[in-house]
Image 1 (tube, helix red, strand yellow):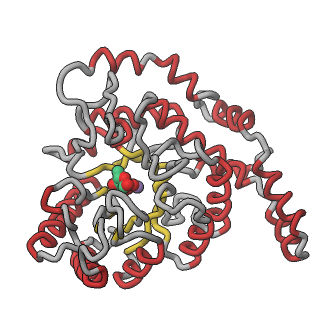
Image 2: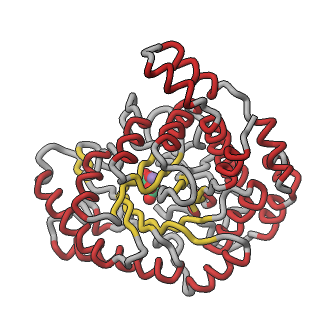
Image 3: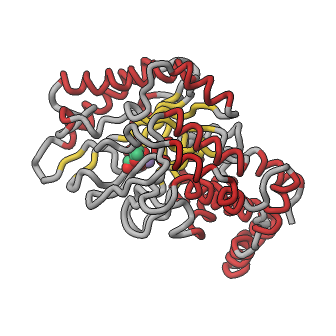
Length: 387
Ligand code: LRH
Ligand code: MN
């Protein structure tokens, strides 16, 4: 089924796991705590390493500041590396401090903006210690009522704040700006869509790129079109993968709409956004509110791998000739044929050939790790969003 080229491409796939997916999470209605949840970033890294051990797919952990602040990041880095992991994208957080109620990098008060800028300087310092390449900025900034603030003025202040942060980056460091069309702001959001994010990163410079979170679009948005365009413009820096039925549900990627994930990966491969040298990082950004966290992450990276494998099987030559011939149904048929190809048995065989469990979910269930952490991790404060 797979050419050796396909398998090499799959072997080159690496997905960043969000440290916060291993902590407790929920909605405004309830955060259901779970036994065995990590109490600190070291335990989060250990859980991520278990996902990588069983899948061979996830050698990187993204951190969130201040949720993952530690005394000694060099120690955390060594701990991760001893487990075969690297510390990845550093996520800033200007959405939980009272000072930022009316905005952070966009706030009308220069002192509040400077406080938010200083937080990003702190994140850049952390990147120096963890060896991370990317600083990811998502802003909750926005308003709830028309007239609440000057939309144009906020954009000018945002551009000025981002420029100050960009100037502080080291030459091997990048900034990825994430957009989201609403929530927690319910009238306007200052970085609501890919166009706004693109305009800001284009103004900043070549080491400023866009982060596309698959849960951050208005219903009905053709996300793979945005992927194609941002790759064409050379400004797609990262994905936050998850899935949703309604809003920013942060469910397991591919769970709600596997066909959409497939279509996105078709455009990623077509646009040169796939592989360790593509400059596009593949991160998960999810919350396992009711399901077990570690198997939830295992399922997630397998979903990305499975849809990547189907997209790699797409007969691009046949698709191209059907497209050139204007043969609508034939072209669609070629794409659907790849999507409907069940790659799971071949992937299981391929994993086994690389010394990995053919069925990582079953391997985790039989591993004993879950039982052990539920026994050991008693006492202390379980990690969460601290909201
Ligand atoms: C905002 C977001 C952002 C993160 C947060 C955990 O909705 O997608 O990427 O900082 O979730
Ligand atoms: Mn996100």
